[in-house]
Amino acid sequence: MGFEEIWSQIWSQGGSTMASIMFVYTLFERFFPPLRIYVEKYTHKLTHKLTERFDPYIQITFPEAESTGERLIRSEAYTKIQTYLGEYSSKRAKRLKAEVVKDSQTPLVLSMDDNEEITDEFKGVKLWWAAQSDKKRFFRLTFHKRYRDLITSSYIQHVLDEGKKISSRNRQLKLYTNNHGNNWSTYNSTKWSHIHFEHPARFETLAMDPKKKEEIINDLDVFRDGKEYYAKVGKAWKRGYLLYGPPGTGKSTMIAAMANFMNYDVYDLELTAVKENTELKKLLIEISSKSITVIEDIDCSLDLSGQRTKEKKEKEKKGSEVTLSGMLNFIDGIWSACGGERIIIFTTNFVDKLDPALIRRGRMDKHIEMSYCSYEAFKVLAKNYLGIDDDSHSLFPIIEKLLGETNMSPADVAENLMPKTTTEDSDTSLQKLIHSLERDRNKKRWK
Image (cartoon, rainbow, N blue to C red; front, side):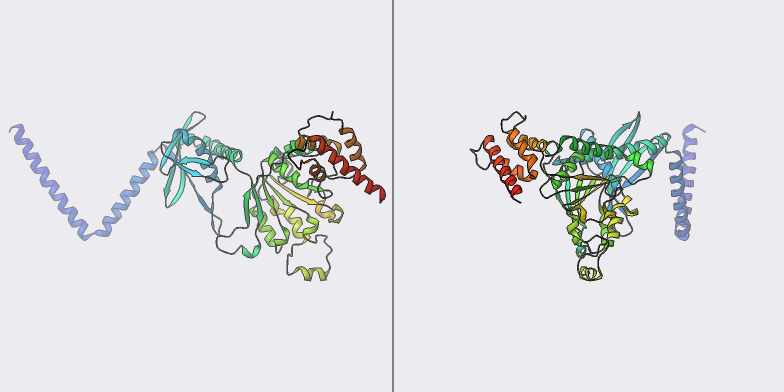
């Protein structure tokens, strides 16, 4: 029998066998459909397990939103990863999407387009990031399983820290104010509304004694770098400042200078819009880290003496029912430790009106007196308003003497120094200040 005859016989027998198999499979599929489905499921599971067992790569997913029990909120990890990848994706990714972001100093922000993938490297290890959208948006990180410990213990934290730094460097500061509690239940309502914080105050332009100013700057520096120290001593990472002094002494300007120096958002808390202690606690939870919470003229906001009469309490039921106890819990209660790197500031013109429990050390850690304009503070204002950068001017000694004999606020000094016409020069402004100081001195003598 030749080769061709043998091959023909094999092919004939094989074809017959295949036909038999197909016939049996058709009968099986027709009369045993549940068994067929079971076989398919088992085959799928077996394939999946084999793939998992032999696939050397691990994937971690970071969803855009996470549940708080009541609603979905944007994941903080997702936001930091997006910022981190956005810094590098414009150089590596082939497909980008552009957004105009109001809260960024960079008006046009580029980020990875959906379903785009870029590579990253960390300590010699190659990783892959993918931005994906399948009903919900998420980032997917892929890496070799031999680097599991390095990635989970170091790399992911590195990405989150870098994302936070980039965001802090590029973001536009915000000024928040609390909405009235009656509106919180309305559709799409928020507890805080905000605008961009664009106050130009800096410590360099702040009219204050240089030594006192330097003391405050050092205190802020120590606080900003004190995360590990606060954890070591078992204290929440927050600090309270009490600014007190007569009107016009620069309390609000000091707050703006502190916010710009620390690069912190400002939350201007209006206590009269807070109905009760529970609302105050809810507002506290919504305050972000790296922020300054301000209650200005706290002595005028509410009666927080802790000794209110029954008649006063009845009157206040129509308005705010925030109590001294609720305020103390807001400052340093258990809930105040939610989040870190927070500063709270009280301002008052009349420090003696405040309950001692409210401003004791540990709550208002540092008390800063904002006093009348000194000669050192005047020199800062002369530089700011008139461009005079030294104290050799012939009128300066006269002004120094008069400032020691009167009580004029930095705001009033600045108003006198500010030119009122285009022809007014620095000498005219200084003479105007001298006349104003002499007038105040004479009034003081006649009292």
